[in-house]
Amino acid sequence: MKSIILTILTMLSLNACGTKQTDSNNKTMDNGKSIVIFFSHAGENYGVGNIKEGNTKLVADIICEKTGADRLEIVCLKNYDMAYKPLCDLAKEEQQQGELPAFTLMMNGKAIEGTANLDDYTIVYVGGPVWWGTYPQVMFSFFKQYDLSGKTILPFTTHEGSGLGSCVDDLQKAYPKATFGKAFSLYGHEIRTEAGKKKVENWIK
Image 1 (tube, rainbow, N blue to C red):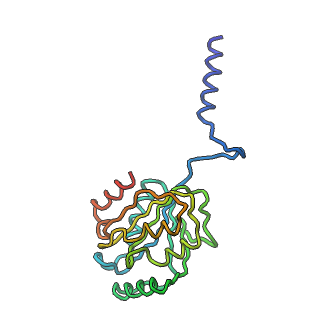
Image 2 (tube, helix red, strand yellow):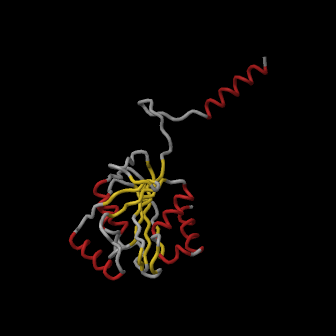
Image 3 (cartoon, helix red, strand yellow):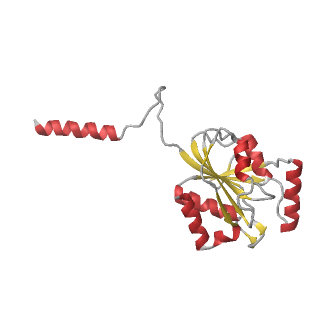
């Protein structure tokens, strides 16, 4: 008799441990997922020369590796393959004119047709280089098209002296109904060093 009772109790305990929470509509709820949304510029970069992978992409790679987050890359359709100084002038012009360049998206390395579905993500890392004090204008094209309200946003930047600039303020203006976690900035040239990688890992922790 005792063995039967113990068996029943064990089964009940296992069932309880495996039960997922449900809402009032009886839909399964989970802890949500995380995603890294970023724009990165390869080619000529200040402080690191001509590079095949942008500084911000290398930060995004570490975040995805350490957290298991999905990766959503913003790819500008405008040509930014130029020397550093002309690119700075172009970035300034785009910002002054409020230009919103067209873009496509790459989800985990594969091109997306149509729009990306971000409904299941609760934690969103948003990263890019700092161009004239804030994110590149193509990122604002994304912000205008995609609503991140209700999500937790973790901003990050790569730079060579601008820090976070006004990136956090501009994100908060774009998404006033989102929750914001601690932001992070890193010198672009640091991401290619062990010390720089460690800074990213410490921020994630």
